[in-house]
Image (cartoon, rainbow, N blue to C red; front, side):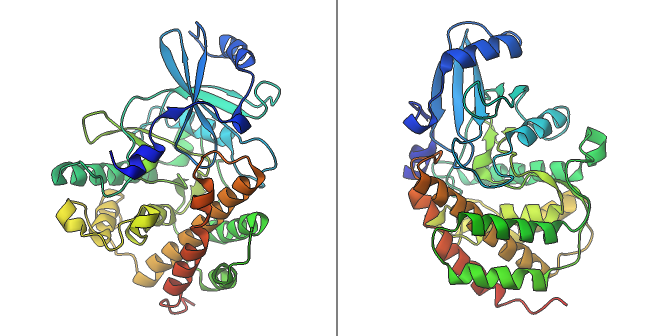
Length: 358
């Protein structure tokens, strides 16, 4: 197991800042989760930087609990209620999700809102180079990632009762404004490149695309693969999902080809030798699966990458802020937060290669 894989895989005792009344949770589950019985045991997953996630074991069954962090939170962040709704809505589609059991919005139970879903046994890969996997399976794993996101983006939101899951139109405009607010609310130190992007992004926005369900944080370590097959059993971490432009969502996923190995990326990696597709091939495969017959203009695609890098800078700042406040979900939060500055500088450098789109 690689160092990155070991850092994030498995569970640990519940961190002091995340502890709650387990007896009270057990009583709630007895009333709200069909078939729940036995003595409750709670452990905390190592992975994840946003909503703290816990493994619950009782009566020979295993569940997962996702909760909002404790303490002061950024506006509209950590929306576990939205996660629960979208997982329920996608239960009978081509997008694999865990079975959702119950949502609790009463903070008196464990101190913040949470939901409970089935535990899905399988593999989570944290290193995109997939060490220890043979090239043929690496290729199949990336193809499966591509297939599942394309399946999500083919769904008509209204057909799964998610037609009101986000506001129609002006998706990029609202996203740029939202992540500008989030970044400023979480700012721990001035980053000149981020400030430049805040000015640049609204002035170079491409035309609006179609509207579909977007995951918002789709990546390799947010899916569970079958224990021995290159097949996704569940897509995780839906807190940033909404209705929006699917190409913007796909570009977020494709940032892995732009980011360095120190940021768990593929930049500078000989992907062909590993059996991993290059970015252009991966994008073309997605376009065919979603029925698009024209290529994405390079300037438009690069804008989506710049925006998503800025968006990730906002997410990293939020992680750094929670670490500063002492309510981070993950022990590596301080180091993760330090990635904000170099990523903002990388995004600003890429922005300089784009001519104004209008």
